[in-house]
Length: 137
Image (cartoon, rainbow, N blue to C red; front, side, top):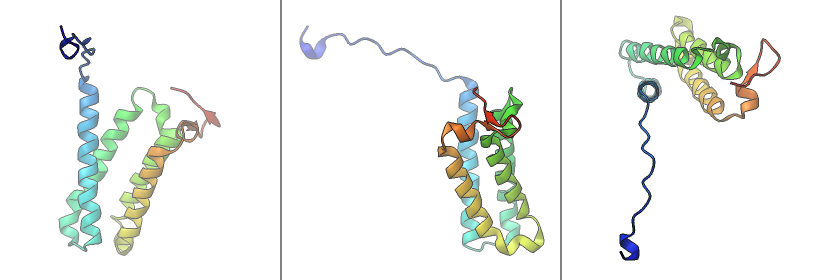
């Protein structure tokens, strides 16, 4: 055999687990519906056309939160869960008629929390507000 024809060791075959595939699919859907929601609000699309996207954003976020939290429910009182709960609370504020005018700044805050939360160090993501310390998974 020549050098170019030498047998290469086979890379280990790793199949993606169904739970991981579901998580990726839901995350992708969540990013998609959130993008439509944000763009619609920035472009001042009519409220009745945006409510479905708001509900889908909240629903996909809630499902993802459940997946992240299971089976260790402490996720909810760690920094990572608190950030998600904060984002969901902000999204629900948009449903209050008096706060509709503030929907774009509220959505910007949600995006900032999401970005910071996804990239903050583990000492903050895994910090437990109940225990007052970092909890390792």
